[in-house]
Length: 109
Image (cartoon, rainbow, N blue to C red; front, side, top):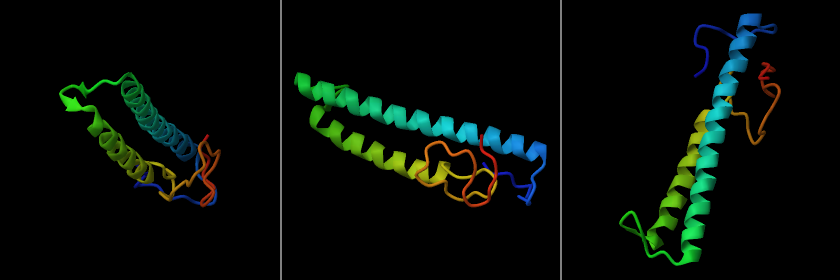
């Protein structure tokens, strides 16, 4: 979801800055939602395993660990695709809440 019609210059316009910030908030929200869903799923499966539940929704409890692992892999892949600067479309890295892009300097907050 980068801006195809705009290029990052040394001094982006106020409209560009506002759009960078808006897109960053959308991407950060998506990232938080996916990670929170993953953590909730891990917690639920852990609690079900502790309680000795044999089957959930017709699926043996032993397979739920594999499903959680698969969802974890998808979460990481989604993060690589989603967690990018809205201005230059380069990865933001491991930084959870950067104020600006470390590569192009675009304001994110």
